[in-house]
Image (cartoon, rainbow, N blue to C red; front, side, top):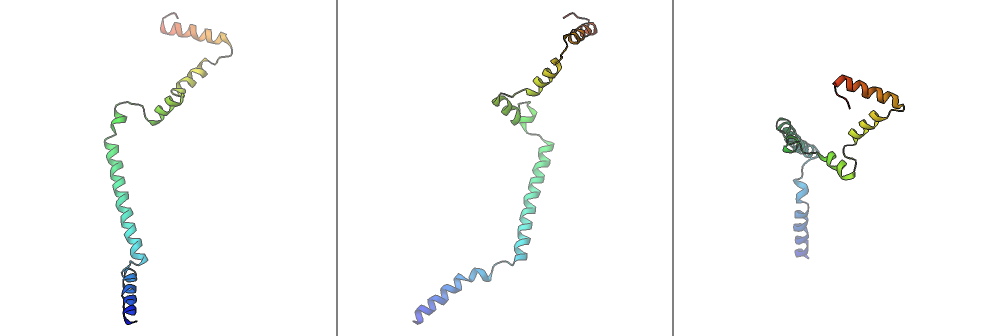
Length: 111
């Protein structure tokens, strides 16, 4: 019985050993605050570096994510087409003919 009692006490000492040396809530909060502060500082430095040296995809004039998605979905260049649609949306052809004549005089060429 003495052996069993000694073993139980020995195991309980190791089982609760972590509790004795655990951080208090204030220490844990402070440690987490320092950790988050280091992460935020790193992110801030990365953003500043990106502002100074933009990525190669922006420099090369390649289409970005949304341009690629627009082309993939069939809506690529929709802004340009919308402008053309509204420009050509003239209910009275007379005004369009007048505008064409004006543009021809303005540029000095006949269409």
